[in-house]
Length: 140
Image 1 (cartoon, rainbow, N blue to C red):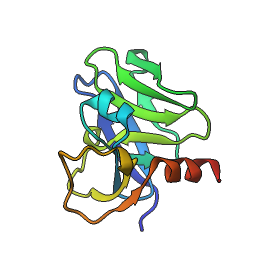
Image 2 (image 1 turned 30 degrees about the horizontal axis):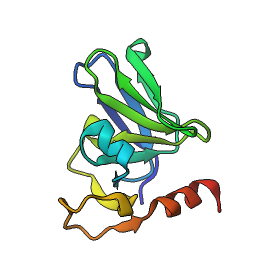
Image 3 (image 1 turned 135 degrees about the horizontal axis):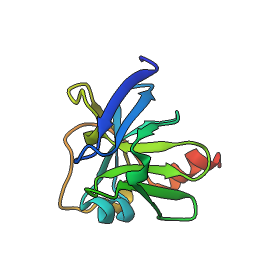
């Protein structure tokens, strides 16, 4: 596994640019009802445990979507920029924002119990329930 892979990306209008360093090219899919409502479908995201460097922060709006997490989007074009935990520095960045999209590998699906029956993916992935996801982040 590679570490510290630099990735650049931007929103649709280009007002917000981002730079992050990732440990892998793994993509996770979130099927929770909030992600599906936020984006109209599952969220395909890469996880960054590192700080994300944003340019154009004056164009970023933050929505507190739960007690523990918030979502950022571009005020200009509405592009979803991130889901992040309020504590702990964990970011989920929509993979479509990032360049070099031939390198990504679908590895994991979370909140699998909330996935609607009308779609499925052919890749074999690690599947986690919401309870298992929360246990990972809380250490329980």
